[in-house]
Image 1: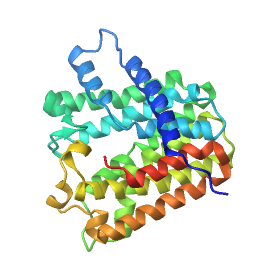
Image 2 (image 1 turned 45 degrees about the horizontal axis):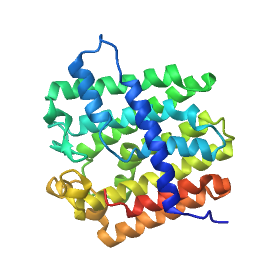
Image 3 (image 1 turned 180 degrees about the vertical axis):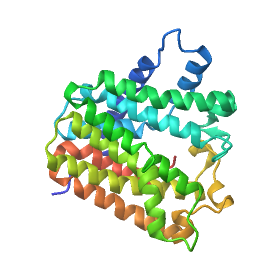
Length: 299
C-alpha cells in the first residue's frame, strides 16, 4: 500500500530537523585557537551557508524510518554535510567549474582566495571523519560508518565521478555513460546518507537495502532535476550561475534526451524511490514526500 504524503507536514518537520543539524554544525566548527582564524572562518562560511541540507536530513529520516533515534544520527548527518560542503568548495574552483556564486553568495575562493578555499575544503573533509569517529552512536557502529562514508566520498565514487565528468571518455555520449558518472558523482553521497541512517538505527538488512535502493533512485532524480535547473531554471532562485553546462558542452540529461524526456525520467525515478520504501509503512512518509519534492524543486 502506498504511503500517504502531506508535504506541508513534512516541510514543518524538516525545518525542525534542519535547525538541529545547523546547531550541531555550528557546534562542531567552534574549533580551538590552534585552528587559524582565517581557515575556521572560511570553513564556516561555506558549511553554514543557507542550503537545503538534503543529505543530512536523509540521514535523520532514514534513521527514523528504520526505528532509530534522531539524536544518535546527528554526528553522521553532520559528517555527510561536511563532505558535501568540501566537494562544493573544490568544484567551484577555477581549475574545475570556475563558479563565482554558490547559494546566492560569492563562492569560497571568491570570498577569500583559492589557497584558503582549497585548505578549507581539505579541513572539512578531515573534520567529517573526526566528528564521525568521535561522536557516532552507538559506538560499535563507528568503524562501519567511517568505512561507508570514505568509500562513497573516494576515488571510485564521488571523486571518480567528478573526474569522469570533467574528462569524459572519447566516443559518442550514451545514457549509460551519463548515469554511470552521476551514480558516483551525485548519487553515492545521497545513497550513503540513507545507509548511514540505517546503520546507526541498527536496522535489519531488509530495511537497509530498502533505503539504499531509495537513495539510488533519488540520486538519479536529483541529478536530472539539477541538469534541468541549469538548462531552464531561474538564477535568482537557484542562487548560482546557470547555463554553464551547455556553454561547456558537458554531457547532461537534457542535452542527451531533451527537456521532456528528462522530466519523464525524473518522475519515473521518484516513483521507483517511493515504491522501494512502501514496506516501511508510515515511518517512511517523510522520505516519500522528499522524493516528490526533488522532482519539483526550483533550487
